Amino acid sequence: MKALYIEQFGLDHLVLAEVPQPMAGPQQVLVQVRAASLNYLDLLVISGGFNPGLPLPHVPLSDVAGRVVAVGPGVTALAVGDDVVSTFIPQWRGGTPTAADVAVAARPGLGVPGYLAEYVAVPAAALVRSPANLTPLEAATLPIAGLTAWNALRYVQLEAGQTVLLHGTGGVSLFALQFAKARGARVIITSKDDAKLARAAELGADHTLNYRTQPDWPTHVLDLTAGQGVDAVVETVGGDNLNQSLRALKIKGRIAIMGVLNGVTTRVDTLTLLGKQATLVGMEVGSTEDFEAMNRAIETHDLHPVVDQVFPVAQLREALLALQAGRHFGKIGLTF
Ligand SMILES: NC(=O)c1ccc[n+]([C@@H]2O[C@H](COP(=O)([O-])OP(=O)(O)OC[C@H]3O[C@@H](n4cnc5c(N)ncnc54)[C@H](OP(=O)(O)O)[C@@H]3O)[C@@H](O)[C@H]2O)c1
Image (cartoon, rainbow, N blue to C red; front, top):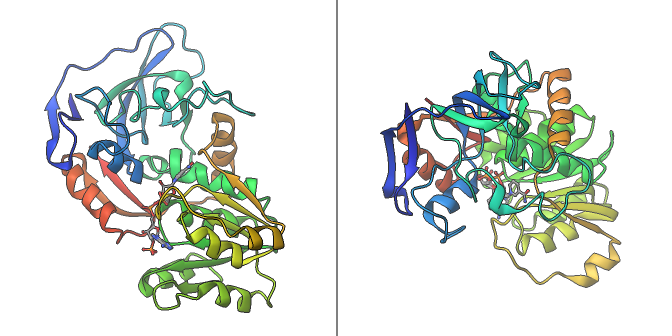
């Protein structure tokens, strides 16, 4: 079978090679991987920016979907023929996690080998069933971006009739757009690109703002909300963008923070924070229980993730460059 691995860090050291097919051990299933999706994190892992101490060679990527083709001893929850999708934080089953549950060292693709191979032997507990209405390619977009958006709206307690602000048209934001509309909320979304904003409006965004041509977008958000601001923000950008989001927030509003696109540190405008009586919530994707709840909602509302570009696995480098260029709308997928 084919597997893709990195021999050295960097996009020029990706190797697609024939390797022995694994077997399902105790409590494991063998999954025929049908599709994968990219996250910005994959770029960081592959370039060595995330964990320079990662043992090499390393099979990257955490987000895959496929079919169970064999089950190992002791597996009862899954059977041959089940369509499954990977989880990113397998030890976090539900509720409040322990530090060990969310240890980065245990995450597939990050601390332990990932899943970019034709067949992978995976603990059955590290998988969930794919939503019945999704293709493998669509399902492969769920583990990080989908679940982060799902929990972001949960953490900010977004209700029908409320307004949420979304930044950019990447994977997390477009999932948040779809989930917010399914809840009956109003969506304001930003982008650097008017064509992407037009596509976001087609997906249901109520108001669109171009953060390049309208750099004072917080004022526009206030104008669109009768001077009150939004009930919630999904902060996919981070860095100093957080202070702008605070300006656009309603009193008692909530911000779910997961983004590091603008850096990992910032000086928070404390006066605005306290003036708004704001709640800031940090995010770490989510648990298996959350994933299953999200999948039920995806089936109920027949939601379909936005997969913008699809590359064969052999073109992972081109796919990563496309992600880096930031021209995508939603998710970038890979197929074998
Ligand atoms: N902590 C967690 O649990 C967690 C989970 C998932 C993701 N994340 C992080 O969340 C962030 C977003 O993830 P993603 O998967 O959605 O990324 P993505 O698909 O790569 O989307 C990035 C998009 O954000 C927009 N953007 C970039 N800079 C912006 C700015 N200054 N203002 C507004 N929009 C901007 C761009 O959209 P336009 O082209 O439309 O402008 C860009 O294409 C990343 O930093 C990722 O690492 C964290």
